[in-house]
Image (cartoon, rainbow, N blue to C red; front, side, top):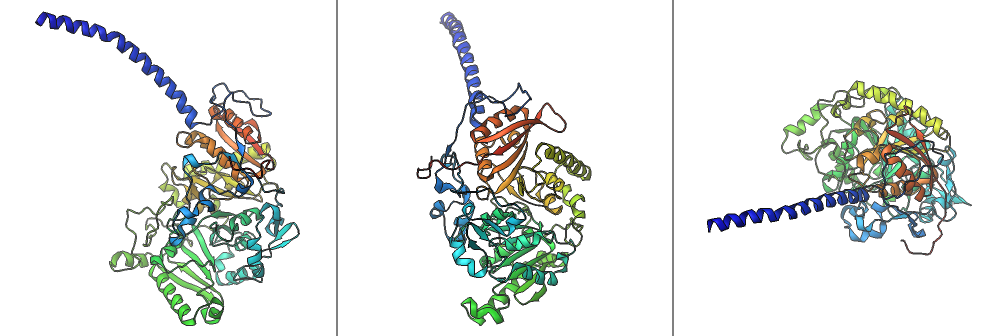
Amino acid sequence: MKYKDEKYEKAEKGSRVLPKTVLLILLCGLSFYLGGLYCGKNKIEVNDVAKAESSSLDVDDSLQVKSVSFSECSSDYQDYTPCTDPRKWKKYGTHRLTFMERHCPPVFDRKQCLVPPPNGYKPPIRWPKSKDECWYRNVPYDWINKQKSNQNWLRKEGEKFIFPGGGTMFPHGVSAYVDLMQDLIPEMKDGTIRTAIDTGCGVASWGGDLLDRGILTVSLAPRDNHEAQVQFALERGIPAILGIISTQRLPFPSNSFDMAHCSRCLIPWTEFGGVYLLEVHRILRPGGFWVLSGPPVNYENRWKGWDTTIEEQRSNYEKLQELLSSMCFKMYAKKDDIAVWQKSSDNLCYNKLSNDPDAYPPKCDDSLEPDSAWYTPLRPCVVVPSPKLKRTDLESTPKWPERLHTTPERISDVPGGNGNVFKHDDSKWKTRAKHYKKLLPAIGSDKIRNVMDMNTAYGGLAAALVDDPLWVMNVVSSYAANTLSVVFDRGLIGTYHDWCEAFSTYPRTYDLLHVDGLFTSESQRCDMKYVMLEMDRILRPNGYAIIRESSYFVDTIASVAKELRWSCRKEQTESESANEKLLICQKKLWYSSNASSETK
């Protein structure tokens, strides 16, 4: 038996040789197949990568994958905002207006079509004339015109919307309103205040007026029954973004804005534990100002027009005062319909919160990251400014424009960040911007007003273009190192975003998109086909894109751009690097050919 067993064992081992060999071959083949499939799935699907138009450069080692084409969306998608889509509102709750927050479609429900412009769309009126008028057919909404014309938000005259500069609390003009505000807040005049946020912005007349006074404002509004507040703002050439203070933090770091403003924005500031006002406190720089006009301010003279009682408005005002005091705000100035509070920069007030277990709202515990602001729930607690930051409060921050090129204190919070890195980045982008202007002379002209730097580090491009008649929305990836606080400390504006999702804006709202290595850094996480589609959605017809990318991706991107109906040419970088190339692209103006068809 022993002999037989040994003989069987030898035979068994010999019989396994062939199956193992076959198995090894099969595994190698499967690995090769899956590698190709992976590239095809996560990279842009393009076959026979075409050379960009007018290119004289050759790249041998480039991405080669399957072809892709895009149909047109139907005309009822002309104002499509994927993550704030009114068609989907019924799926979400009405409590605290959560249905107006970001709710992005799942992968299987994403649109793979080109969003058409409205019938009769024209190239936008150029800045600065656009601040006062825009083409009606570019933003063809009548409801807001009919409802708000008596308050001088806007009015339709022939083929245009005219913006008289009025608002609910300033029907006779925003300039006089801001003049009064400047009398109450002298810091608005001397460069101390540079960045502001306007919650419930209307058509952004307040932010538009502040531009002439050297203050850069993010106008914030949801997509609601006013139809297109943010779209009107961007069509006018005024910075704006879709958003609402509801159950999640706004996509900004803590201690960012020098001033916040609400003009009868109807946000219930004292409800739900004061979380809405606590969020304003979080994003406001220590020493910064919160300005409120409308209920309950000046209730003694206004209550009859608010469909309420004087007792109710007095109670609301007292609750607001108490809440503001409890989170270390103090009354700064008050006159007529305008009240101004200042956020404390004194640690003594915040120390009291830490030492009083019965304080409400309480101090946030250390587990809640102050700058975490991408789908981060609101909490009814006070985010206390870090005591280690000595030069972040408004009084210690250099005045504009000096602060633009002064190394921000918070760069030390960025991994690898320091003064030398900041200065090098500042110098690098001056060189790059100069090169960009040679390749795209439209930069610096009235052809380009609204600019987005889709994956900035420290806002270097925006700083280099600061003297041109444009503004830049600086986007920092929610998955990258948190450099957005540095951007705000420089006196620039921006937002967190994840490019695996759609951006919080309307179609056709930017004149120039800038990309710096986005496809290289995010291609393993995001489907780049959808990133390109999103770029097409938010870029204006005849608008431009500067795509700075690895040579491995650049030809493929050019071919996808061709399917988007863009024209592109490939250029050298300023350093003539073999590993990195530039695509200079322009989106063509086209009109829908299937206005009555269903969305593909």
